[in-house]
Length: 342
Image 1 (cartoon, rainbow, N blue to C red):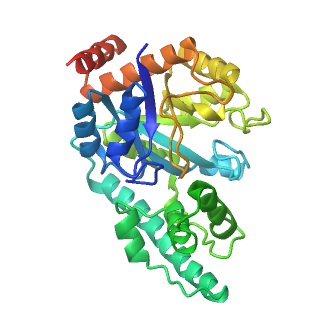
Image 2 (tube, rainbow, N blue to C red; image 1 turned 60 degrees about the horizontal axis):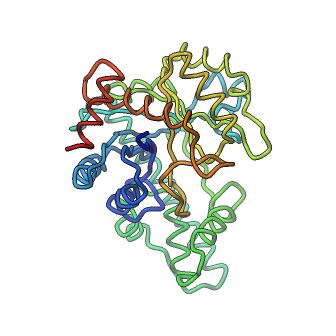
């Protein structure tokens, strides 16, 4: 069975990888043949991703990720796939067109969200400098330098944590741990440099779905699944109801970040959703400083079961077919096979 990782972040948002090449080198070394780029608010990495995949004999999938807001769920206090913020909902797009064809109002809205993210981080950077001064540190973080040296244009709070770590403890043996601690203590709610996101940073769910469709993609709901204590969010606890609601909202594709879930739960949820007609794909994200394997595994197993690998591959074939303008999973399978053989 061909191994697939359909959700990988790159430096075009924030990533454990220092470059697209590093991500694809690691995928190739681990035998993962179908790989999906899936950055927050960005399609800028598509050209490099496609070129890098071609050079390594990999098949590229093109995705994007948003954080949206569903006002109805927020009013009801319903936690969807953000366990801490009712109504806030992560949404992915799969199989987007390339060359990128987003224009008009949809392009303006995407640019606005990116600008909101950068402005929030600019304000947090200023507050970090206030904190550093109060701590007696003779250090000043330059936001424009952080943007130029550590990002590909989109600044996230993890970039600020990395910049702070580089000036405070550049030689730490565990940079991921230090960056996570700095982010948690200083940049999250209650921290000295926390700045709440602007309401404009969260587009309505329907708007995000329209942007993804305008870009040629498949709107995709990322399931959170079971947490370490076996709990589910309000929205996901009743699987049948969640599936029915997703269909009503125009979603026919779902994904899972497999290390979050046990094999049993992932097989139950993914199998049920595929039987209900959803495209189902899996990924690893790699959107934290920690470097983990690209080959997928669940929370309680070193690799995916054969059942899960088959579900993931069929989902990848469906996305590949959509991306190429083909009309069936079999056509997507044939396209992937031919690409990997060439």
